[in-house]
Structure formats: C-alpha cells, structure tokens
Length: 176
Image (cartoon, rainbow, N blue to C red; front, side):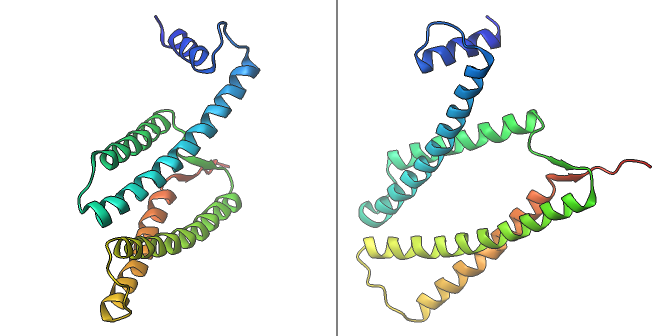
C-alpha cells in the first residue's frame, strides 16, 4: 500500500466518508485539520501548564498526566518541525531588499511582544504556583528579584528567537 492510498483511507476514516474526495474537498479538509491542529496545540499547552501548576502547588510532585501532556506537546512540535524542514517550508524567500527589510522589521516587533509575554508569563506562573502552594505573596526583596529575573529572561529568550527566526529569512539577489 503506497503512502497516498493510506493517507486517503486515513482521511476518509477520520472525516467519516466512504469514498475519495475531489481536490476542493481535500483542500477544505486539510484546512480544517490544520485549524484543529493549532487549536489542539494550544489546548494541550494550556492543559499542561494548568496541570503542572496544580501538581507543583497542591501535589508537590509531577503527575503522569502532566508528563503525558508534555510528551504529546513535544511530539506534535517535533513532528511539525521535522516535516516543515523536510519540505523546505521553514524558510521565507524574498526577492527584493524592501520586502526582506519589512519582514525583518516585523520580526523585530514580534520579538518585543514575545519578550514581554515570556517575561510576564514566567512571573505570573511563579505567582500562581506560590498562591496555590499556600504561600502568601509578600512584596519583599525576593519578590522584586524574581520579578527582575523573569522580566530579564523575556528579552534574552526573544533575542535568541529573533536570531534563529532571522536565519529562516532568505534574501535572493538575482545577478543583473
């Protein structure tokens, strides 16, 4: 059984159809499955974080459910990364300097947003874990140190992600 035939049977089974679909129907099915994949990715991420906070705050250990959610999320991310790289869909190609520069500028703006989200996210998760574990949130030196460390880790993470993402932008200069 070749790969295409197996894929068609799997799609037909998944959507509950007995016969093959035409090209338009397949494109709609693929679009729907892609959206479902993105939604499930974020739901698994949120579920994993909630489970981890509960485990650390209440159970004082990490449960099997949290580990399974983490492994599922890791598998989905790794699979998507490998498939996109194999198919050459990770890199974005630009044929003129202006569009390339616009992409770099958009990437810089996204990096600033990522820095704020990552830093604040770390800090908020720390507060949630402290609150669930029964610790009172006291504004003292430790509180400010944690806030500063979390807020500084945001830009550090964003800078690393910026340089990694910038390697995926490719300016193609044609010989004149």
